[in-house]
Picture (cartoon, rainbow, N blue to C red):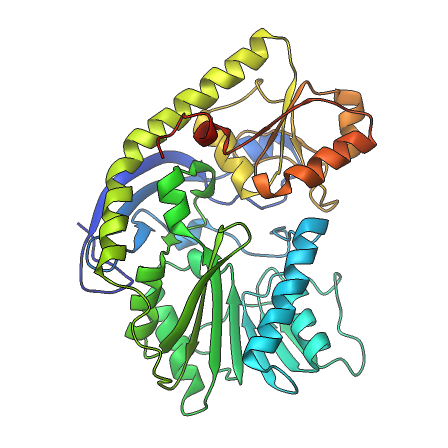
Length: 398
């Protein structure tokens, strides 16, 4: 059993595996042949009984690519835009971010850092190898700097407030990474805010669409609390966001007396979820294969809505080819490219008028109303399904 990279106190016990999956889900691929032939790797999920961490023990960092052609932003969705603005305002208020130095690790295309700096009149720096200056080149007088590079142990960048959203799940040696963030602060007081996918939901609901190669690390409140304390931070709060899909942690470089945020019962709950995952996974596969077979028998053309990581995982996990006519995405920068692994074409919503689908399968249920309205605007009335239908129908035990 490999050692746990999160708490360093236990070993990883394997409970789920997937072989030959695309090693990147958000890369823009220009031809179907390139997409089908894209490099593949293995997922071997292990569970640490000591700290509750879940990670891909087969992960190889050299197989992933984070560059200008990594197109991950959700910022074209009105639903996500509203959430993002609201989150930024709440973060500014909670941490008193006014006229302060802000560092964002894994800033993507820079949307959140810009909100923090504009709405709080802060000064910011963001690190991300996927940042593209053609999306937002800071204007003269704008107090934001972007580095299209990784944040590493050599970066040595400190700030009053350190933010990291949807990045830690891409890091294999989590304790080393968070320890480096702590060391960079030295004696400078700072508050910390991280956000990552919430693993308890993934385990409990068997959300297999949220298991893909780039995500090599999965966190619950328990394992996240262990990680930050082990790195020398003092966690002050954990929470959930965006329909409980995201997990957040707030921490400080000094002890504010918050005390323990989780307990042994949380670890015991994780053990039970992990034990039940394999059986639930098979029921999910059976449900979706049966449902897609019904659509095919009824002569309904089916598409998925969402061409990002969830879509790639859905298609590759189920081994889908002609059963799905394409993947829809409102991000214009993704349209016209092809899905890694399966080679499905990425369509824009307007393309559906010609496709005239009989069924649309939504990769993230939180966008259901937004997608339904997009379809109505185009005069389309397909059957709408969502990725959590297997759970709601009893395909997965609660």
